[in-house]
Image (cartoon, rainbow, N blue to C red; front, top):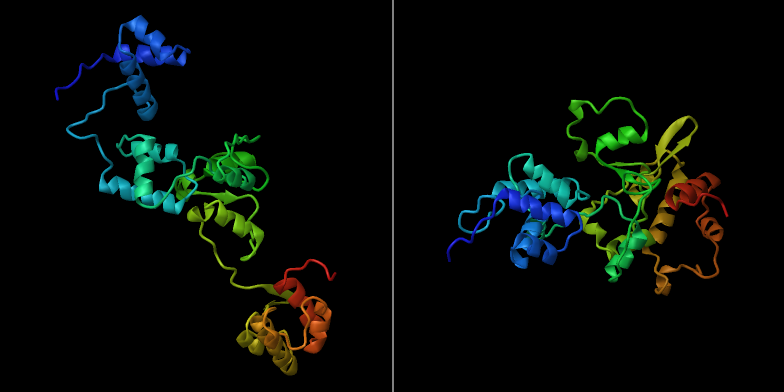
Length: 300
């Protein structure tokens, strides 16, 4: 099939400018004497590539090279909140010009997805997953409110009125993603379940808390959370260590539906204070167990 007639850049610019001014495809088609399909094609290409300049297309349409594809994959894995527009700009900086749709195809091929927004509220995510159309508006120049994750680094400087710009030693600003409020999630909590439901977990890496610590008598101690740690902890005396070890073993094997694991404890009637007394745990152990391990703020 022979090559179709190529229109001058001046004609293409005129079509795009007319469309931006609010003129429809048919109106531009009549004014310039061109087919409606041609007008639409030029406008779509301009939206996809951001230019009206004819791009070289030897043979099949230009595809992303393996090197550029690897670059995209690395970028998204390093910062899952990166948008397709940012990825396109990243490739343009190294001389590769592709459309955002091409970037989406590359990411999907690698079982990845870019983000249209760096920060989405959970409610809008759930509604979107259920087929609802969501208009997400932010009062700030960045996505999110008080608990937003700010990127690039330059926006963080503006957020806290830090004079100047980030030093070059910190690398590219968009490689940084700073949480205004660090997130602490309960592994089996409702928030984790919602994140899994909205498939946001495809873009997140969860880090397990390495330990809980308490301050006592001018020193910092790691709170024992396993039977082995209980026996080696400096927080308790020799006999209390053994009692606490038995308590942890009881908690680890406790199954509300298995009477053999209850050891006389009624999960619907027995209070936690009564459980502590059952294992003869001292007040210090009760305090760090309730606050540092169970994460209760009060003794209620």
